[in-house]
Length: 316
Ligand code: FAQ
Image 1 (cartoon, protein in one colour):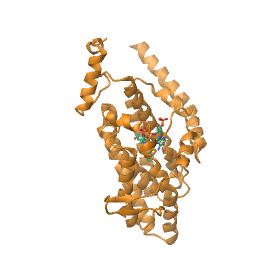
Image 2 (cartoon, helix red, strand yellow):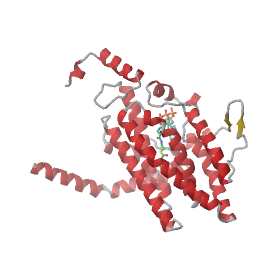
Image 3 (cartoon, protein in one colour):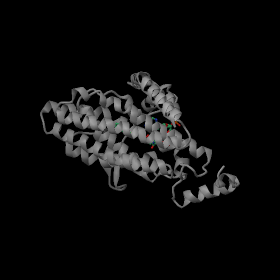
Image 4 (cartoon, protein in one colour):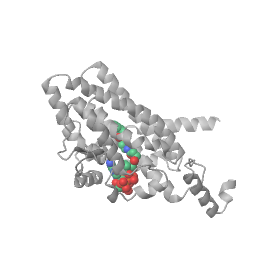
C-alpha cells in the first residue's frame, strides 16, 4: 500500500478535482474516481479497436494499388494504424485492464469501434477519400485529445496525430492526382465522396442533445469539445478542400452562414448511425469475422511468446 492509498478518500477526491481544475494531468498511480477510470477504458479501448479494425478497409486495396509508390505509401499507413492500436492498448493497460481481455470484448462484439469502418471500400478513390475525410475527421477529433486530462492517453495522441497528418496528406495528394486525370477518374472520386461524406460526419458521434457521455467527459477534461462543435469544425475545414478538388459535397443544405461565420449543413441520417453502431452496418459481420480469424491464426505466436517468457523466468 502506498502513502497515497492510506489517505482518506475525501482528500484523494479533492486532490483529483484540484488536478482537473488546474488542467494538470492525472497519471496511472494517482487516485481517480472509478467512473473516470471506466470512461477512459471505454473510450481508449474503442479508439484502439477502431485503429485495428480500421486496417481492414484499406488493407483490401494493398494488392491492387495502382503503382509501387502508392502501394508503399498505403502499406506504411496501414502499419501506422497497427502501431496506433498498440499505443492505445498500452495506454488502456495503465488503467488496470488487460489487452487480452479487451481483444476478447472486441471479437465478442461487447465493445464498440468506430462506425466508419463498417463501410466497404469499393474503388481505388475510396483510399484517397479515407485519407482526406476519415483521417481529416480523426485529426479534428484527436488533436484536442492531446490535451486530455489522462497523461498516458494524451501522450499517445501526440504521436498518433503527427502520423494522422501524414495520412490525411497522402489521401488528399492521391485525390489531386485523380482529379487531374481523366473524366472517369474524376467521376470515381465524386462517387466515392458521395458515399463517404455522411458516414464521416457520423464519426463525431451523436448530436450533443443525444450524447449521454459528453457532459461528464468534458467536466473531467477527457473531451475538450462537444461532438457537434468538432463536426462543425470538420465541415468548415472540408468545404474549401472540396472546392480545390472540384468535387461536390452531397448535401443540398450546405451553405456559408455569414452571421455564424460557419457553414450550415444538413442532418446525418441518425437511424443509419444507430444501425451501424448496433452491428447492422454494411460490413460489421465481415469486419468482426476477419478480426476473429486473425486472432485465432495468431494463437501460436501468443503461445510461443508465453513459452519463451516462462523459460526466461525459470532461468532467472
Ligand atoms: N462509432 O455519448 P457519446 C481513426 C457511441 S480512429 C461507434 O457521444 P463519447 C483513425 C459511443 O461510444 C476513429 N460508436 O460517446 C483511422 C457511445 O456508446 P457507449 C476512432 C460511437 O464517447 C483513420 C454512444 O455512441 N476515434 O479514425 C460513435 O462521449 C483511418 C454515445 O455517444 C476515436 O475513437 C462512432 N462514430 O463520444 C484509422 C476517438 N460515436 O460507449 C484507420 C476517441 C459515438 O456508451 C483508418 N473517441 N459512439 O456504448 C471519442 O472522441 C469519443 O469516444 C467519440 C464518442 C466522439 C467517438
